[in-house]
Image (cartoon, rainbow, N blue to C red; front, side):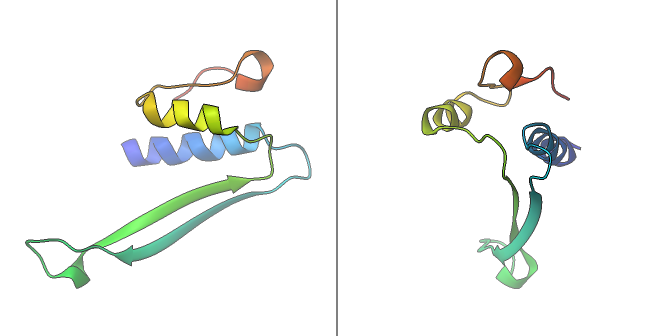
Length: 85
């Protein structure tokens, strides 16, 4: 459920902040996971990436998001939009 919410928020924000004619891409990459208790071939990491051609975030805002916990938000006024899931 939480993974679905995170992916939904990422895609929703990408769409919201990408101008008409822009592009939103969702990609998934599988990579090996070395797990101590189980054979490595049964465990993998999945990297889910949402990219867009929207306004983007500057380095300071990205740092705030990473440090701010699960409910961190950046931006102000119209650029930020409203609410979350």
